[in-house]
Image (cartoon, rainbow, N blue to C red; front, top):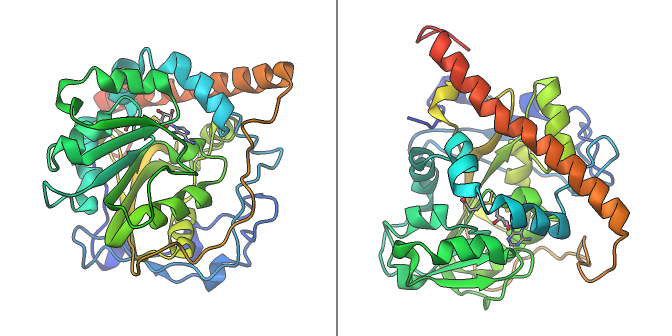
Length: 342
Ligand SMILES: C[S@@+](CC[C@H](N)C(=O)[O-])C[C@H]1O[C@@H](n2cnc3c(N)ncnc32)[C@H](O)[C@@H]1O
């Protein structure tokens, strides 16, 4: 299985052990002060054992220190990134990072158990994840939202998605009423949101009481070179950051399931563009208890075109490294005898 979910006692992991030693977020409290207070995270193959207790940390900021510029974690850069990437996305990007078996594995905790459920797929792009959703839910009940019309144009061409509602919008400011959906799904999009906490807060708002959010996204690399390119490209959150965002937004029963391409044999040191599926349940109707200030990025504000272009170029160059990593891992998987670590 593509999933590298951990089971049983050996897989109880103290968050403190995987906590960052200086994530460097400006204004954040991720410098050791937060994580000693965090409790146990456990992963398991069923919902009983897959239990994660959240942190009691005062704040996480998405601001970028100079060591982690994350050039494409901006709405404008992401828009142009997908202007071009949408042309090859389904054929070049997904096969290396986001396969059909990974998708099914990642959607399993979303409990898409009823064909009549109202589902929103935020940052739905070309509809690759939506194709997994409509296996379980009637397409007419599913809305695909994305800020890129170029990505959405690809989704519109897919026959099984013909009855889905397809709309342009911003994950941090969703055009759905409060208490609207049974399920919120977002796969591979959070890494581009300037303020992920705001996006997850929106997930909470639009869900009905008892509704479930499922955010699938990258995980941070530990190998220095991969970490360098990840930090130049976009946001690769740490597992504990997802948990904190969910918990602070008000979600209960927050769980994290690890996923990855099968030919990685569970290796996570290079980070993964699709590395985990995080779920949480909305315990009360209405808005999130979390109050936030103004948006991180004002897309209407003019930008210096030279600075924009430079950031965009550096971000794209760093992203190219991550086109090569799955090929490198695939070759390693072919060469190294089965059963040995790679
Ligand atoms: C890696 S693609 C994932 C597409 C799809 N969910 C999948 O599983 O293949 C990321 C998508 O997030 C979208 N995106 C990035 N920032 C966004 C935002 N602030 N609001 C809505 N969509 C956004 C991009 O346009 C892109 O289509």
